[in-house]
Image (cartoon, rainbow, N blue to C red):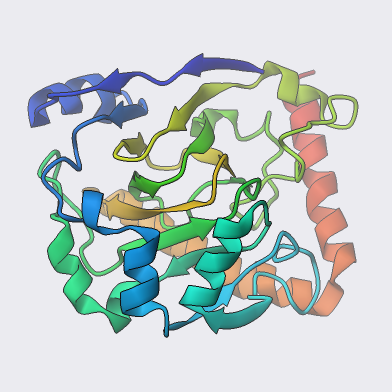
Amino acid sequence: MQLQTIERRAGLNRESFREEYLLPQKPVIFTDLMDSWDAKDKWTIEFFKEEYGHLIVPVYSAEYSKAGKGYMTADKEMPLKEYLEIIEAGPTDLRMFLFNIFKHAPELCNDFQTPTIMDGFIKTYPFMFFGGEGSSVNLHYDIDMSHVFLNQFHGRKKVVLFPPEESVNIYHQPFTVASCIKDFANPDYDKFPALKKAKGFECIVQPGESLFMPSGYWHFITYMDGGYSISLRSNESILRRAKGAINIARHYVVDKGMNRVMGDRWNQMKTDIAKRRAQTANG
């Protein structure tokens, strides 16, 4: 793989962001996008434990994407306080993602503002993501095709990104937004030789920083510490929204249905197709 470091920028205005990053679809880390947010200093672990520790939340292990009836479902539910104590205690693969805490605590929306760096922010779907030290997010791209602004509050995340044109080289599984490469931290180049040719980006996102991930970008994320972030999504294009709707239908109707019916056989079929595509593309 060829990975270049993602730039860190402060003081970007709408015009410079649009010309240097949005139009060329290039990731960037904002070091000051969150500076005016109360949440930047307010949203500590103790704050969430004391104010919202009673909320019952879904928790996922590294097995959530395993083929079969439990595909993409939570392992269990527990009080938020209990989960936060687990990630404070040390390494764990347990994660919380796509949890709309704002549905249960709408007052938290007063602690941050919708960025003005571009148009099209989707105000109804801010999600928080929590993870324990050493946990990771499998290589994938976001199903709705929105641009994503990942705003980190606690802990550090290591992020590897690939643009959409690298989908073949990173073994895109058909009918999904996922890659066949499950252990991306220790890739098997004998099994996935095209990965050697993949070109992308890497960075470590620190607390107080915001990572811009352009639409359709693949991302692999490792929690270097137990921590959490909020993702704000923006979609200024009707065509991009249409692609997202098609992706959602394909994933939830076709892929989930076939997983329930065929289990591991369906997963193997998708893997075989991805490998054939990579071999054909690379001669």
